[in-house]
Image (cartoon, rainbow, N blue to C red; front, side):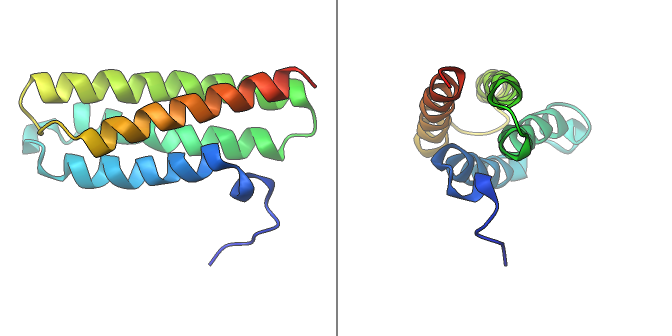
Length: 120
C-alpha cells in the first residue's frame, strides 16, 4: 500500500498523526447534519493537516524548512484539540479519552521532533 522509503513513514509523529485522523473521522461521524460545513469540516481539515505537514516537511531538503512545517503541524494540532473541546462542550460528540490521549501523544512527539530538527 505504501512505500517504506518515504522519510515520513518512519516518523512516529507522522504515524500517530495518521492514527489521529482516523480517530477524528470516526469520533465525529455523528455530528449534527447542520455542522457538515461547520465544525465537522473544520476539525477534519485540521486533523488531516497534521500528518500532511509532517510529510511535507520531511520531504524538504533543509532542517529549517522541516522545522517550519512541524510548527504548522503543531498549530493544526492545537486547532484539533480546541475544536474537539468545543464539540464536546456543545454536545456534538462524547468525550473520548482515546482521542484526547492521541492528541496529547502527537503533541509530545511533534514537539520532540521539532526540537531535534531545530538543533541540526
